[in-house]
Image 1: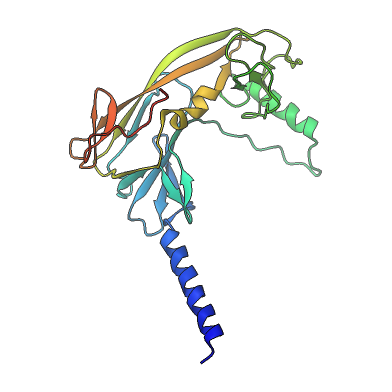
Image 2: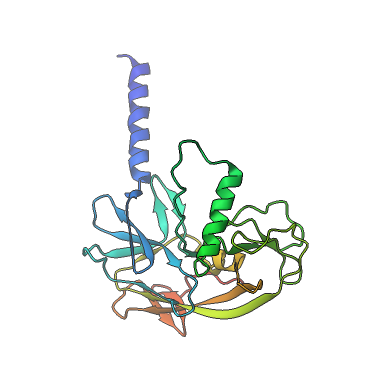
Amino acid sequence: MDWGNTMKKILLLLSAALLLTACTGYNNSTSVTENGVYYHISSNHKEAMAHSFRWDGKEDNNVITIPDTLSDGTPVKKIGGFTGIGVPASFGIDYYYEWPALPKSTKPMSEEETQAFYKDYANDHPDELFGHLVKLDKTEESSDDAPVSGSEASADSGEGGVTEALGADEVNDGSAEREFVYKDITFTINIGRNVSSMGANMSEYSILYDINHCGILQPDGTVLVYRPSLYYNVDPENETYYAADGILYTTADGMPVVKTDD
């Protein structure tokens, strides 16, 4: 018996078994958005996972409902979790915008032409978030001012300057002072009876990351910054979770599910 080849086959079988064990059955090719919530659907279509809520920035659109089932009858069993062979997917509330397609041309547009196109688009669509989101930084100086939703903007925690976002009337070097306008908003999350699993290390910080780190540049030049909070309701027939005073708990041990920022 060739023990070398036998051991190789055994190792290959073990690797395949581990890969199959790690595979979650969720992937991007089976996904759908319903009522603002983006879902991954398992490859066997037996369950769905709520991945994110795509918020349009409207204050009256602050109720997120995770239903018992999707419109095709697929039960929603998870909020966050893992996709592919085990990639973490934390549930979050994200600003939602549609990227416009670049105009077709015989030659590729230069970076300057692309930026000009997006700026013109933002100016022509003042009510859309695209081009008007600005990244909020914790410090006055940042070397990581990456573009956000077509913008190139940064701000400090409330007193310093902010560079113009795409779609503003002018682009400056960031020296202009900006006024920050703060508004409180509470997102109500209604959870259906079939949800029995949450992503690991669920926290307010991860759920609200996008809202806490971006502001919306207003036509008058001010930057609107929302201060979000969460309130939970759970279907009484849910056997895994319950809510009390807007806080989400695990039924088995009565422990809070979502970590707070405290």
